[in-house]
Image (cartoon, rainbow, N blue to C red; front, top):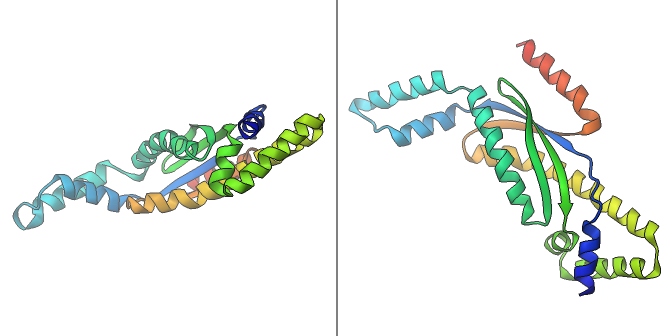
Length: 201
């Protein structure tokens, strides 16, 4: 009971700063080719397939793949991290060519679920007991400090993990992409650098 109460208390007043995922689709040609090969048979000497692949590559470019990818990530990523006790919202803020910017905001943290999955049951129980002690003793500043540190740590870890995992998952689907996570404070400078680079191509 104390653990559940502490977990609920840890969920209150979430004030995580949003962050941004900057995704660039570098090469999606292998994914396009594979999809076409699945849908179109070989035909005579593979000519039918080669013609279909060439036509698909002309029509489906990295820009179109990036747009579809952003739509998919906005749905898939929040669902995946929810299992870990993190509720987040994600929306597409920008797209130009193969460059897509996604805004990520942590809406809620179920500290108990998160700690159980990351550190184990014993650590989660100890953490919950500590929060309950703070509340019982009226040490509100201690509670506020712990919440702030948890929020910061979760945001930093998510930024690091998503930037690392997304390109790997996309590579499994034959899409070569890069992903850079930026804090709200650093996003503007990074964004304008990327736009300048795209305009210079």
